[in-house]
Length: 331
Image (cartoon, rainbow, N blue to C red):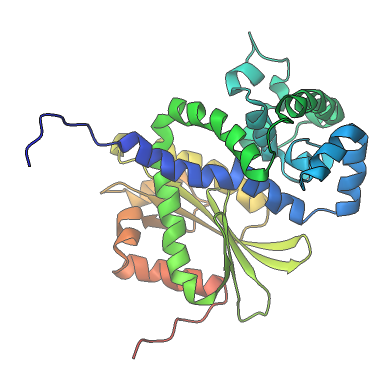
């Protein structure tokens, strides 16, 4: 059937879908809930009682909601500094508005918390003041929306209203996020026979050691594999950087970025560092000189094919380093 109307393919929206999956792992409720799960609930409740007005604790409790869904406290931001981004998004503040030099809120020195997951000395010193300021803003928001039926999904939707423009503004990063999600999915397929729990941001797998391994999205590096040794104690195993751009002329800059990430990963105790690239031809000697911290370079195209020597090497190492046996052969 012929039609006189034609729309362009929604390529940008496809890219947003990949970005959103990773965004949830770092900055949205998924990341908050993962962080809170490992916190001392007694200490958390103590800080919430300090920073959140009693009437608002009561309002949220009546709706069956925990107060940290709306109110940040120091122990949460110290455990996961990236979550400053969650509370910023929930309040509806853009990055430029929040951190900007000209029109910002004079909190630019907190920016590394959201972008790098690190807290400088001044930021740590002023963390209580930051939480107090958020408490005032969150109280205003809660008072304003109380006539509506509150839920976790409702609060998630509020944060998403700010995410949309931010993702559109960062459209140039869509290719990179697609590649990261693709590598995560390839790993998920490899360990699926041993998967104990598959969530949107974390894969928990049973291993021969008797201790679970976690495969997770992370902001820096992009994907990490850790062994859960005990409560809140992990053995860092693999750090993976994914550079999905196809521009050969820019690949060595990207490898330099991967090296910086891997150097930080080494300091955190990661024993293996891998870099996945997406160019047809790579000068391996030059790449190794630019990122000596990279133990293995992999081609995204080769991994995507799910076959061949390079993919088989990747699969073998993932299984070995997570202490997972090969899947049973199909009859």
